[in-house]
Length: 486
Ligand code: NAD
Image (cartoon, rainbow, N blue to C red; front, side, top):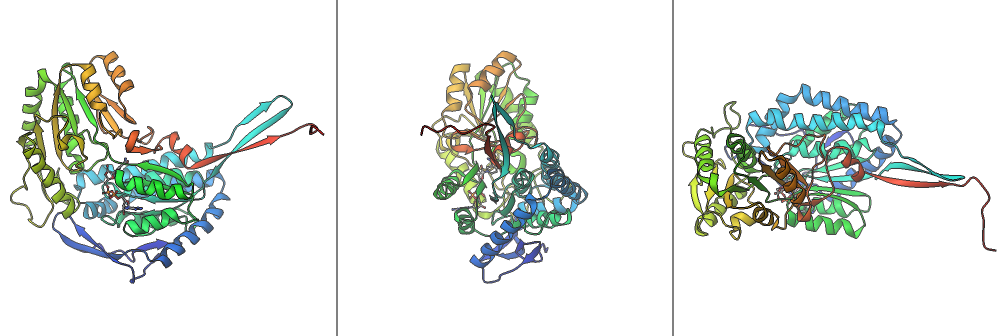
């Protein structure tokens, strides 16, 4: 299997290599095979990327907003035309099942480009009457934005950052996760094909040190990170040195609360999506499933029955529903948490093992459910980022609300109930940036997405993202004479 790109980086409209950079070995997670070998960016590569992005941004700012929108929408169309090829590459890069990547990755990226492409021409300032005088505002780009990605949704993350950034007139340098470097390069090719100036969207590969070098360079105006809380703290601090703008999309340990009057089948479907989709590697996952004590047995029986039918296997096969985890270290981490759950006294209801009969070199793990989980257990407090669902029980609304909020994270939350007043009361009090009522993990581009507390700063998607990729210039216009005290 070979997914070797033309070169490691894409800068100023073309592939570029510098073999003196540290090796990045790209592994297909289902077999452990090496599918590509890339090189981390050297200082010379980083310098080229920044210089070309600055040049391209000045050129891009001279495009009319309608022209900018057209380029983004063309890019969306090209992505859709190549969805199959892009999805196959995403599956090789991440190990996610092809049935997921065909509908959730490049397609979601295309939607972001289409949405922000449409919005580009509507971004204006305002006029402010001041009696005889007036003021107006100009909505201006920030300049060069650096995007740093996690490995779970490489194409989607690149598009969710690039689409609003470019719509507002910025350039972007994107550094993918070192675990999934391939798909962003395809996106860079597509932008050029769609008519973007060379250098407007550069891709620079590398480990954390390359992200840090980009985040601290004086030519960088904004840093947008999708990653873990510990990385977020470092990148936020590094950006603060230069008073740079930031968007931080970080981790979570989100609650999914199921009341006694919920539709159980729908609640089970949501809990499956909230824990086992993408083999549990989703930031907003509802990994603390609070189930009302009166329906616990029914809920567990039904989720166990349905999960037993899940097809785990080679993610390239159409029928596969659960693929491997992304890497050996993630595999070890998740298996470690299963052990922690057992030793903390939680009841392992199903899963927890490496599935039999699959490639032993792949990073597979069974979908796993623990019951009898208490708030103090590490499996209920720490982000595992794997298919491990914890069931906790509760008695009252007040009690579950307090327990759901007792975490440093605040990315997402879900509530299942048929009582409409209770549903709205709950989401109003839940400390989370994104909430769902009677569903889970739907993130359409039209809806803002992001976290509160340690889960992040800023919002992606929707009109809200515009605030984070542009700045307002105020202009006071005097119509009369200037008064002075002397
Ligand atoms: P990570 O924090 O290990 O790495 C994220 C990115 O940051 C990588 O590209 C990495 O190379 C880079 N990086 C590491 N150290 C850096 C530094 N000092 N300076 C600059 N860049 C640095 O995260 P991960 O393991 O790739 O992804 C999983 C995490 O991402 C989970 O915590 C998950 O919840 C989170 N995530 C959040 C969202 C969201 O939208 N909120 C979405 C997906 C994933």
